[in-house]
Image 1 (spheres, rainbow, N blue to C red):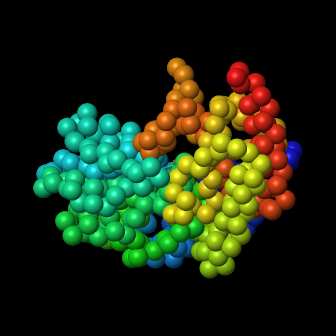
Image 2 (cartoon, rainbow, N blue to C red):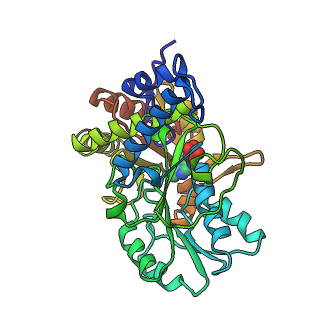
Image 3 (tube, rainbow, N blue to C red):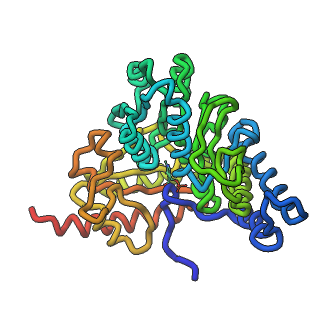
Length: 385
Ligand SMILES: Cc1ncc(COP(=O)(O)O)c(C=O)c1O
């Protein structure tokens, strides 16, 4: 059954592009072999994996052998951070990250702290951006890793990764970035970004869920986290998810083409700006979270003063978006990213993230703006004077 709800949650996940699905289909049916087998079925699978490794390397501007396939960015982040910490433990025990990272990074650092590692959580400014000077000031003789998100998944703010990477390199400290949201939309060349490691995942770039990769620069030491069949040069054992990997490769190729055709800049960003303009002209007391310019082209994170985001989401019948707060078993919590940016709780609890993507249309931005306006006005009328 087709959904008739407008999808504007492309930072959470993206639909699979038709060309990606087409590329995957043979590997879900006839080409079902294990890429490690020596017979024809194995060779077919291995050929698919090799092609995908090259496609990912093309997007990242790196060598195919620098790509380690994983189950997604959570695993890639864990592998980069824990794998570096264990490989470098004789050189120090200090990690630098920021307060606005994804939980895949933050929680991995928390776990390492229980094992004797120490983490510095750098503050971010009111737009969610890390100051490179803070990175430089935090480095000590014991620093073994710097890990800073490329583009924030909630507010879209783009960090000055190249500047931070230059500082890391000057001090001889390995640098990793959770590059999930930026890759395929922003500059994606590892040579240009200057990273030693970068995490990516297929499902944010119109590929399947449950597959991703870690770029690991040649010579950068990493200790494996799982052992077994010795796949991926012994760094990540386990039978390869061939169909998923083929999907990741195809998604990287389409992302490269989309970047060449300036889809995010010339199509997605103008739609995002139209939605913002329309909301601003129809509603009072709305507040943009995130950097006004240094922001992902499809990201619009807005606080609607006085309107709890959970209530707004429940009221929106035609639109799929995300709230800036997360429910856990105990209570609704304000987003740690908005809190790190110094956004007060009363605004953080009213934040909604619109994530526009390749398949949104101008007509949809008008429908979404009108429905949001209607529901915000209805909910504001219920607020006692
Ligand atoms: C910035 C960032 N890092 C990591 C992840 C986790 O990625 P995956 O779902 O592939 O494990 C996500 C997705 O939610 C993300 O947005």
